Image (tube, rainbow, N blue to C red; front, side, top):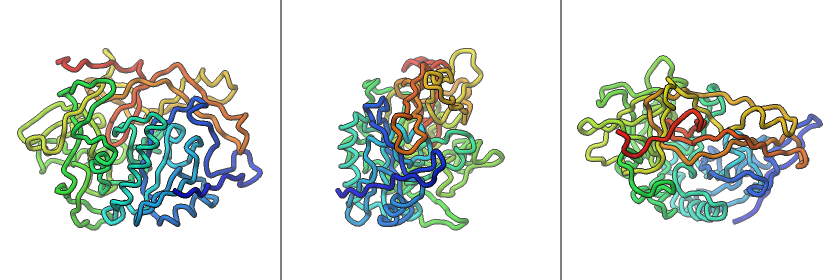
Length: 397
């Protein structure tokens, strides 16, 4: 591994005009590192490093070369890189850029790259006590936006051609042997998406052109148990239409390793709660899933729906201690009553206030009383307040 520090510099005399990352002291400053984010760079290995070395307001902790798995460290994990497009996730994550292009992923995501990346992730996960599961090792495409408008524009890498199942085999945490720290007993109500990457070759398109069918990590989701039914649509991406087979349309794709609550089965078709909808996918004899486990949450009794957020930020009063402006918490979705989602153990809310260049005395970790569950809501993770939901017991029917 080589070390090439990303640019850290004031770009003008204006307060707060600096980059390309924030100084911190994670996890000793109170910011637990919970996630490792898998990116593809959309430029070359050298181009990625050059981007982080110039005034671009962006960075990542590591960059990995496709040809041989060469790793370059550019931001120390204790510091906060600007990589995820979501400040809450940035403050709790390590970002790893992989040389390559999402549409051409099958030619860029090489075995040396997978192996080098997995070795690095295993090291980081052990050092920072990050679980080796798909709730904590996630793609950039699974990071939520902080508002409805931001949700629409979030990134979609590393996309369909990243082999999550193989990657987790290399991590020593295969999906077929999935366990959960909160519930080691398998729960028949929860399933984990796990299509055979080599043989799963759905039709896709990009820029109005069909793509050659290639090994892919997702299953399509339909409104009914039929290939003739429309694909489901995200209300933000397609408010007046159906989902599509476009490669970067994440509204109708359930990705390998993500877990959902199974609500129905009709012959060869399985239905899950997904993004506030009942979504069907082809699953003959369970070929595209394995059993999952974890907490199940639903809206609290009497609520018609509950807000779904892109962060776990504190309540407004938590900021008063530091005399800094409270950050508004904007819902991105509304979870209907009756739907059930797989959740992580509730965590306390927080916000990292870091606004000035090289003045750590002005930085603060704001901790709140509100607690949140992280859930697999649609193609992305999301958060709901603990006070808005209730835990469902495994056999509540």
